[in-house]
Image 1 (cartoon, rainbow, N blue to C red):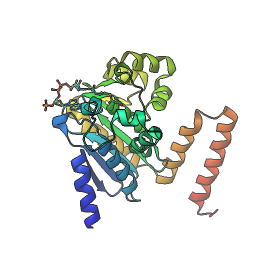
Image 2 (image 1 turned 60 degrees about the vertical axis):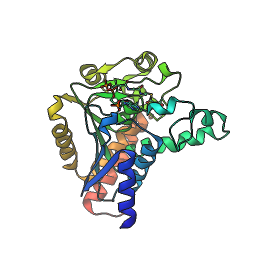
Image 3 (image 1 turned 135 degrees about the vertical axis):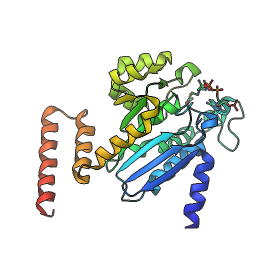
Image 4 (image 1 turned 30 degrees about the vertical axis):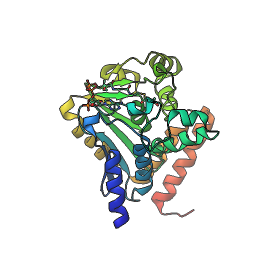
Length: 264
Ligand code: CAA
C-alpha cells in the first residue's frame, strides 16, 4: 500500500497521474502550467505505470490537462548542464553506453502498443517533439480542432528517438513523414485526420467525451477477440497476403475454440 502511495506521489511530481476504473485506465499529464513538458523522470513514471496496470485493464486513455497536450522535451535539457539530476546530452554523447540511456527513455513509450491493451491518446493544442511521439505511441488518436503536431527534433539538430518514427511512417508513408520531420511544420487537425494520424477531430470542449465514447465502444467488444484482432492488424504490414490469410485462419480457429470452450 505504502509503495503504491509512494509511486503515485512520485508520478505526480514527474507530471503524470494514473486512475484505474476496472477495465479502463486513464493516464493524465498533469503539469499544464509547463505545457506538460517532458523529462526523463516522466518517461520513467510512464514506464512504471505500464508495468503497474492491473490485469483487469483493457483500454488506456492518455489525456493531458491544460491548453497543450505536451510541448515536448523540457527546454532545460538543451542547456549544457541539462535537467538537474538527469544525464545531460553532453554526458550521453561521451558515454560508451549512451544508447542504453536512450533505451531507458524509450521504455516510457513502447508499452502502449502491448497486444492486450488498446490505447487512445486525446490530444489538444501543441503536441511537439516528445509530445508528438507520445501521441504516436498510442494505438489511436482523438484530436481537438486546435491540435498542432510538430516533430521539431530535426530542426534542433537531433532526430526523433522516442519510438515515434515507425508509427509515423506506418501511418503517413515515408515521403510525408520525411517532409513532416524535416520541416518541423505544424500538422493541424484536418490534415491529421486526412493523413490517418488522427482517427477523428472534435471541438475542444468535446475531446474528453469523444475519447471516453471511443473507449466505451472498444470495451464493448469481447476481450479476446479484440486482442486477436489487434495482433492480426498490427502484423499485417510485415506479412504477404498469403501469410496474412494464414494468420487470419489461425486466429479464427483460436477464437472458435475459445467460444466453443475447447482448450488447447
Ligand atoms: N520545456 C519547459 N517549459 C516549457 C516548454 C518546454 N518544452 N514549453 C513551454 N514551457 C513553459 C514555458 O516556459 C512557460 O512557462 P512560464 O509560464 O513559467 O514562463 C509555459 O510553459 C507556457 O509556455 P509559453 O508561454 O511559451 O506558451 P505558449 O502557449 O505561448 O507557447 C509553445 C506554447 C508553442 C508550446 C511554446 O511554449 C514552445 O515552443 N515550447 C517549446 C517547444 C519545443 O521546442 N519543445 C522541444 C521539442 S524537441 C523534443 O521534444 C524531443 C527531443 O528529443 C529533442
